[in-house]
Image (cartoon, rainbow, N blue to C red; front, top):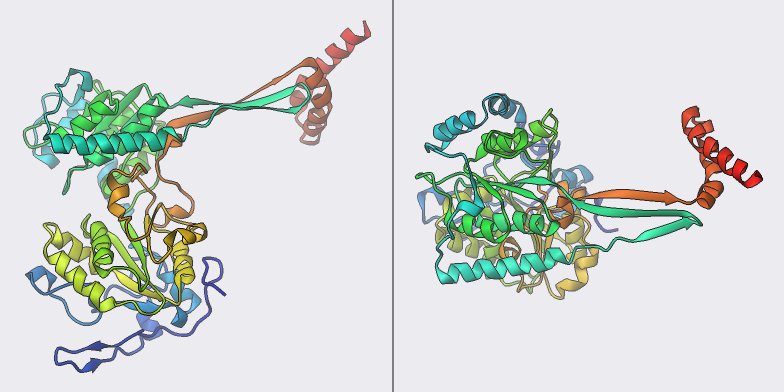
Length: 508
């Protein structure tokens, strides 16, 4: 029986799948962990995932830089040796304690509601050390951004691919005649005003501007507000500005954090109020979105958000250089990124993968972020690719890379993932930037019930029905009987009065 999310393989206790060697070449055996060691600390969701208090070697960390010096063996688990509870525990992510974050964010949300632009300016000066003259600018009033031609071409190619993929999601409206004289259809309308959050912080993300603005542009949203933290001189990142102009953004809010989300949700003197807010962000941005979607602001959000994550499935045919690069491409996002390697079958040179991770991590400008993310990474050993994908379905990763022989044949087994990358020539980076798919995806296991951002995210669907006299004569008696069963007399009369009128006309 394959390991699935509904019926994990009932196996015995957790054991180390392989031994390590000491610096002198002697084997170092790791003792099996006791049940007590398999209990979670309070910082994690779940009940059986091994605590991060273990002294373990993160996946592939080296010894070149001071902040990369670690010791002991990396966490690894063999699915055939795990109990149901232990397998389920591996899907847990770090718990975010929103109670304290809400305590910080709630006053900001309320302050922006009351003071509007003045509050946004104050928080931008406090958190970003920037004094703003204007909080919001109209994109049409801004000059064209001057970019290096090669950079411009890269964003142009990304725009074209993102546009092509999302415009293909348009579905023609179709009417159905369920009974003679009873016609039903669904019509599509764009959300009138949307807010797009493009993070700043440790990295500028103009690609996110394209991922959010292009489908909004295709949907026909009339007001598109893009919020992004300003540079130290109060200006807008020129790459973000270029993407915003190209993709039809109407306003740019020069603010980040909870204050930006609040300004778009409530509306201010200069910032239009929006009806739905999109985009990734830190814990304070996420908290603000959660608070405001349940407030009088009457605003919806795209999806719950958490740290970036990737799950890589690799078999013996996978190039260790590629596997390591893919793991690091997510780890460099930040210290809270989630990175999981699943080994499918025998013959995989894990030592080569770890050596490559160490080598490549040491060469990265953001290597410190990557190393911290890798400190809570782990490796899972599956008997084959089918079992590896079954575990992935349980984990429900934001990004799933299937780097195995004949990867395309395994696509049909994937049930839960934000986006899938098939084969050795499909790094996760292409989806982040320019393949055409959207990179705003569900994290934290929400891929079990949420989809990534798409054209549909910016649309509303309205149902329409129209009946002829003959249609009501045929359908009406059934409706009247159902209303009678539910005790809703006015519902029944709305039908029977019309039927009586029709009958009187026929009689005359």
